[in-house]
Image (cartoon, rainbow, N blue to C red; front, side):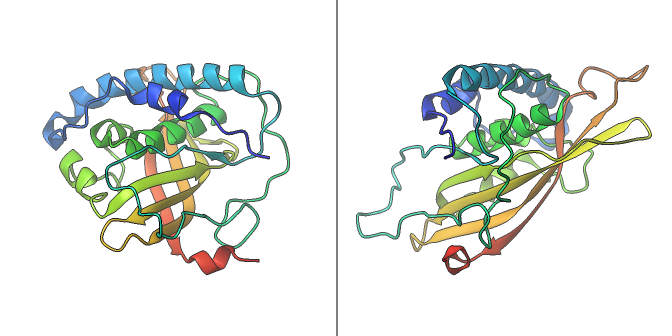
Amino acid sequence: MPVRIPVLVALALVAGCSNEPTARNNAEVDINDAAADAQNSIASYAAAANRQSPGPSPSATPTAAVPNDNAPSAGSEPLAPPEPGRPGGLPDDRTPVSEASFTPDSAQGAADVVQTYYALIEAGKYAAAYRLWDPRAQQAPASARAFAASFGRFSEYHANVGAPGRIDAGAGQRFVTVPVQPYARLKESGAPFYQIGTVTLHRTADVDGASADQRRWRISAIEVKDVTKAAGRP
């Protein structure tokens, strides 16, 4: 069974973040500050998770729901993303994920950046989530304002994060891919909304001339596709 991390742990990551959009031309200064804050949050999250997890956990690590004023009515269809191993669900990886401590530059460190990213979005801290993108990435959002606006159609937003793949190394660069299963509720209709895909993260290797900021994991691409609830049925 998945080990569920209490919502207070996830919210601790974002309590000090501002959700005010920032202009793209100020991204470099803001990104440096946010990267350091996010890295500290990731370390705190990992320590809390290790303390509270009684044993090995499977690949999926769901974020908990955050109460909001747009909560669905009693008659609304509940959010029920497809389970691991089913169409539209995360890979059904039965190999336990290590509960040992990890370094920020490891593959698990990259997965925690993804966990932090979706926890920030879930809490409505869009500006802080935006700063976890690599501003040089082709897929990077055009601005913090545009990024925040892209979530305006949802009344709530969550994600399950899977176990990271192996680090792909080459030419002084590092990449890792993390499975992700976003799920949300559409604000206008109240209907559930499900996606499945991957998040790719990048960092510069520990080489001469690389700054501390360049050596941090940043999101370089998110590839997801829409799935229907029927895809998760037996």
